[in-house]
Each structure stands twice: as structure tokens, then as C-alpha cells.
Image (cartoon, rainbow, N blue to C red; front, side, top):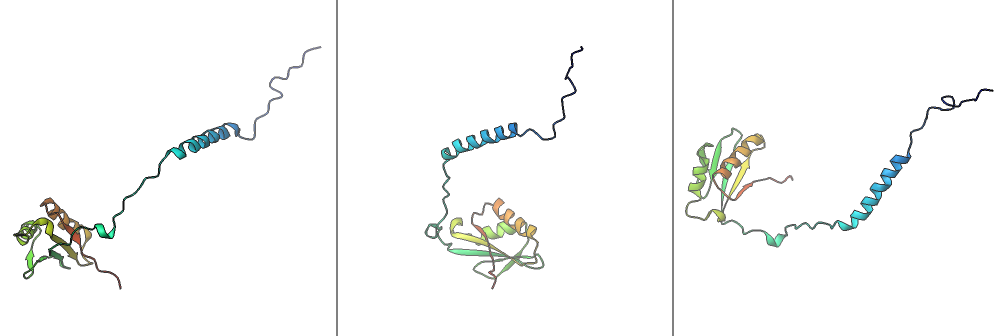
Length: 141
């Protein structure tokens, strides 16, 4: 009598994915996170407080960007119109006789002025070495 071979006949395709390797990987990751979590120290963030603010400026030079993209400098005297190329010289002239740290430069722009124009003004002042530059804002009612 011939021997009955079960090769090839008894094998069936698996219909379900094998979850054992997935579970093994997840358990290893869980153990790694549980071991390393207590070793990570929480970082401390040093936030500024009201009392640590720098000294108020003695004088303020205001640069006004109008709707028509014209620049004006308002210092202690009357407002003077200036172009972007001569802006740094005009601000240095307005700061003459005072220390640059005690004089703040504030940029005020109309809401219709493109933001790119405001950034160009700030960049021009920073490249000229002017230290204290700020933006003027109007609070909503």
C-alpha cells in the first residue's frame, strides 16, 4: 500500500495577520518609555516679571509710515519727511547728544501699509546699529 503524503495538501493560506511580532515590539517600546520617563527632568522656563523690565527711555523718536508710504520722523521738534535711504542718518541726527540706549525708536504704521515696508524700515535701522526699536500698536476698543 502506498504511503499517503500530506505534503502540500494540508497547508492552508493564513487569513489573519500575525499579531505576535507587533505586540512584542509594542511591549519593548513601552518598557523603554517607562524606564526613561523618570530620568528626564522637567525643564524650567525663566519668564520675565514686571519688576525686571528695563529702564524706560528718556526720549522717544517716532517713525511714522503713512498710507502713501511716506516716512516721517517725529522727535522733539516738528515732523520731518525722509526717504528710506536717509532714514538711518536722520535717526542718528535725532539721537545726537543722547546715549543710544536711553533713546527708543518707535515705528508707527497705518494699517493699510504693507508689512514688507515696515520690515524694511526695521531692517534699515538695525543695520545702522540702532539698538532700541519697537512697534507702536493700537489696542482694540
